[in-house]
Image 1: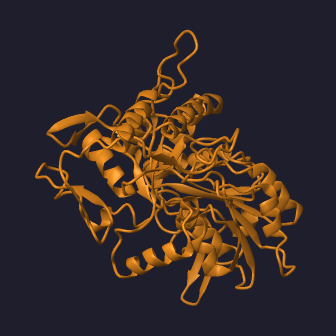
Image 2: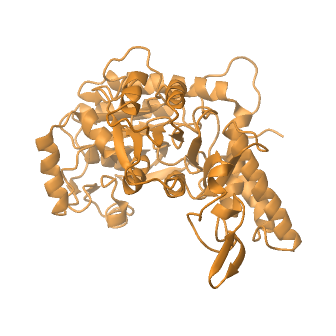
Image 3: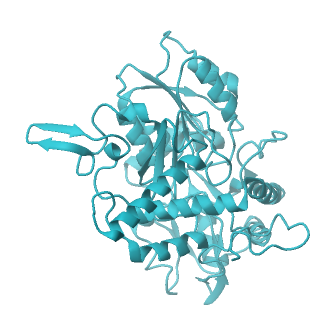
Length: 481
C-alpha cells in the first residue's frame, strides 16, 4: 500500500523542494486579518513538527489495544507491552545501537527530561567539570549547573566553533579531566551542524564521555553511533505525543537509585528497604506513555522508509532557497554562519533573521496575522547564543536584564526563526520570502498592533475572532524563552 511517506512512486527524478510527506493538518486554512482565510504555512518545524500520517494511523490502530504495560495478565496488556518494548528496540536501532547490545533506551517525555535524568544518574561531584558550549539549548546548559562546574566552548561571531576550540576547553586549566562533554548535534537557532564525529573522537582520546543533545539533529540527520549518551524528542520527529528517549550504557543505570522513584522500578519494597529492578524498568517508574512510545516508533519507521539520502537532499534544497532568499532581501539580516558569509557550511533548513527597524515579535505577529505563516521569535531557549549572534555588549544585556526583572519583556532581544522539515515545500519558502520582502519594504499593517508588557508579544487591535481575545494569555509568550 502506498503511504504518505513516499507519496507514491513516480517516474523520473523528484523535485527536491516538493514535500516528502503530507503531515497531519497539511492544507489547513487559518484566519487572517481582513476576514480572509489562508493556507497555513508551518515554518516552525524546529520547535515542534506536525504528526506524520503514519504516526496518526499507527496510534489509531493501537488505541483499541491500549492497556497498562509490563504488569497486566490480560491480552491487551501483553499486546501493549510487546508494542512498547518493540518501540524501545526501534529507538536503539534508530540511534545506531544494537538492540541486543550493551546500551539501553530509557523512554521519557522529551530531551529536557532525558538530560536531567542523565545529570542525576551520573552522580557528579560539585567540583566535577562538565564541558558544554555557548551554542546549547537551555536543556543542555541548566541541568549541568545544578550538579557540577561548567566550562564553556565559546563561539565566533558567526556562531560556530571548531574541534580545536573543543580541545582547548577539554584541556582547560586545573588539570582535572572533565566528567562529560555535553554538546548539541545541531543548533536549534541557526541549524548549524558542529563537526560531531571529530568532537567525539577528540573527547574520547582524552577519556571524556560525550552526551549529544540530538533533539534538533534526529529529524534531519543520522545520530552519531559513537556518542556515549544520546537524548532526543518525539515532538520534533513527527510524533507529537509527549515522547523522548535517553540512550546510554546499561551499566550506568544498574546501580544507584533512579531519577524517579515509584511503582514499576522495583523488585521488592519494605517500609525500610527497597530493591530496585534492572534497567530500563528501573528508570521508568509509574505508568509510561505507551501511546507516545508507539508514535515515536512509527515516526522512526516513517523517516527510515523515506531514507536519509532523500531527506538530506530535500532539506538542503530548502535550506539553499530559504537562506539565499532571505539574504537577498534589503533590510534583512541573516544570523549564523551563512549570514556571516562562511563558505561551504552545511546547515539544516533553519534561518534566524531580523528585519531592520521592526521588533522581532512584531515581524512574527504580522507574518501570522496577515499571511498565515507560522514562525518563531525570541531567543529560542538559547539566550547566551542569541546574545552572541546579535553582537550585544554587556551594557545592552544589563539593560534588558533590568527590564525583565521589573516584569517588562518588551525589550527582550531576539530574532525571527523560520524552519522547515519533511512537510515543507518550495512554495512554502517562497511564501515566506514574499511576505518578509513586503515587511522589510515598508508594507503598512492593515491594523495597529499593541505589545504586551508582560510577554513582549504583539497582537493586532481587532475584534476578529482568534486574534486579540484568544491569543494574549501569559502562557502564550514566545519571547520569554
